[in-house]
Image 1 (cartoon, rainbow, N blue to C red):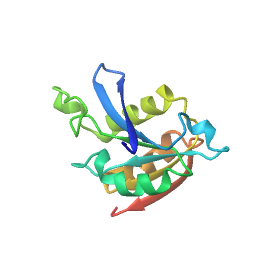
Image 2 (cartoon, rainbow, N blue to C red):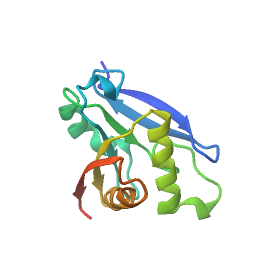
Image 3 (cartoon, rainbow, N blue to C red):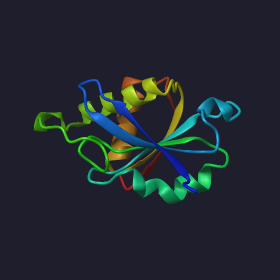
Image 4 (tube, one colour):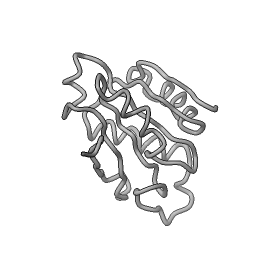
Length: 135
């Protein structure tokens, strides 16, 4: 049995981006009002990095673990100018919108922690908390 479900969504500029969802419930809303957990990896890393912690937390939380564009199972962007924090933030915000997520706790490693801080600036009402690792 797989501990997660694999999903894809289309970014605002047409790339197919990959993410994993951990948790027994089909929706973060099934978690008794708890915010979803969004796991953001480091610059050259991907969703696999969070498998251990996501499996551990999935009994009580729904976790979303994306692969950034050009990483893991997400499509590569041919325009190198799109590999910027601003583009990653747009991709993350689009992921949240596609899944109808309005509150998250972010667990961010390295770049993921920096993106979590930036999310607090561009979408402060979405962030319920931020755990930063190796920032």
